[in-house]
Image 1 (cartoon, rainbow, N blue to C red):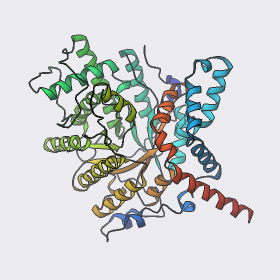
Image 2: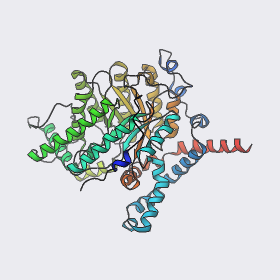
Image 3: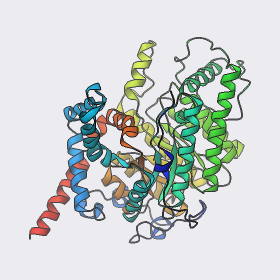
Image 4: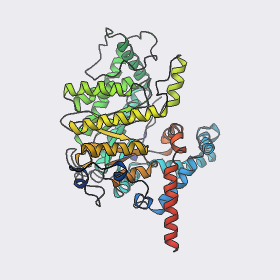
Amino acid sequence: MATRVIPRKILKGPRYNTSTKPLNTVHPSLTPAITPPALFQKQPKVPAEAALAMDDGERLFASVSTGRLLRSAAMLHATAVGPMVDMGMWAMRSPLFQSGLRRDLVMYTTRETFFSHFCAGEDAVTASKSITALNDAGLRGMLVYGVEDAHDNEGCDRNLNGFLETVTVSKSLPPASASFIVVKITAICPMALLERVSDLLRWQQKDPSFVLPWKQDSLPILAETSPLYHTQKRPELLTPEEESDLQLANQRLLQLCQTCEEANMPLLVDAEHTTVQPAIDYLTYAAAIKHNKGSNPIVFGTLQTYLKDAKDRLLLTTKAAEKMGVPMGFKLVRGAYMSTESKLAESFGNASPIHNTIQDTHNCFNDCASFMLEKVANGPDSVVLATHNIESGKLAVAKAHELGVGKVKNKLEFAQLYGMAEALSYGLSNAGFQVSKYMTFGPVEMVMPFLLRRAEENRGLLAASGFDRRLMRKELVRRLKAAVF
């Protein structure tokens, strides 16, 4: 069955804006009160605590209206209650609520709560307004076309058109307000094919003499420490039809890369679970070799640092790319498939590929971030640090100041999910760094899988949002007192 996509009319946005700036242009400061040269030209090392002030709610939320702040605080408090999240997920999945008035009630409730808080809107126009509002507050937006996995070429082609039109929408936005177009390879390549290709790549890792005639130039995908238990026996080679489908998928990605390059808009490839990640990395790196030139990468991959092999793969890939003269862009995240990965490994009788402790995951993220900041400071690479962890933010800020890396170079971006980690986002922006929000848009019924996955994957993040909740509550009380007295 073909995956549902946003109808063409929904993606129609405002007219093309020819003032979009090229990637090698220094973007104007998003926080006029703090001039970048004062922060990032040679100067004494700035302590992280001084550069990233997180205890002043009045300053952090100065650009947030009281109404929005109140709604955000209410949503974070609600989603921190486990039973409430469970009930919402049950209602969205239950057959009892799939038709008639009950379905309409669920859709309305979802639209006014989870959707309005975690998504940018139901169409491109609304998403554009959301990004413009963020830009006014000093933040940027990553445009995420909210389509899920595809299972045939027809669905992949329709999804590609949606991504291409999202690039067109980005041109209509204020210059530099949109930082990335985000693509899911699972939406433009059939899932079954990604699984097949991943199996073949894993077997080649086990047996280097195993020849894959369709394989094009890419970069190292797997390390010696990478999990290979998914592929228990030698897989059959791709059939002629599968090879043709793989070529079509590659052409879709390259067409999207070319469109992004012409629009001066970087393309960020999202990560998935390890069952299909080798194929995703293979396609991503092959596209990067073709499109990443000079000092501004167009194609960015994503590395999930909760995986034990993450740092080894990062070192291998960047070393090979450097030898080939290919500038690399990476988004670093902790990861979102912990439960799935652990259960899958256990089913094969293997240890989980995820770090044994949360501190090991923190250490891996921070080590990879430090490594990439060094690469940014001394070469053409770029990095997006996608984290909700305040300590990781402080460490990265300190390292960036130490190396002289910041907004002026346009090579470092911090990122958080839309509707979450607001204090960290505004704190980083106030410190002079570029900060983006991951902004999904599309009709509620189509984005429903995203919302369900977001609730499941980020249960721990939602429950641990106490820092934001306390700061918001404190600021709301301050504003109430100021209004009364």
